[in-house]
Image 1 (cartoon, rainbow, N blue to C red):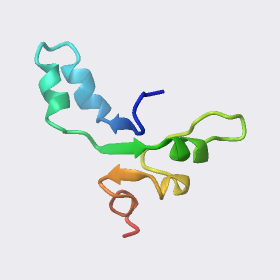
Image 2: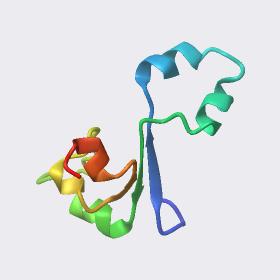
Image 3: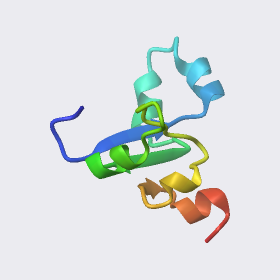
Image 4: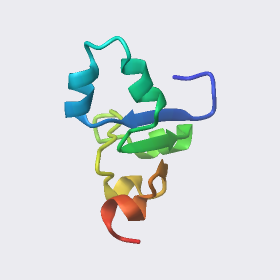
Length: 82
């Protein structure tokens, strides 16, 4: 866990990540914020996302269980339920 009150999870396009993983300037890709989605999860969010086995389940696109999680773009934009 993070010493901060929020854990951020970034979702990247796997194809672009694979193509850039061997290049020296791959950090530019991550710093440019060319990610598909960013989740900002609190401890309460993580607790709410536990499955029956006690494992945290985070998905992309976000599941209904993730509707209250702070994310960019928003849940409505990602799921088409604005």
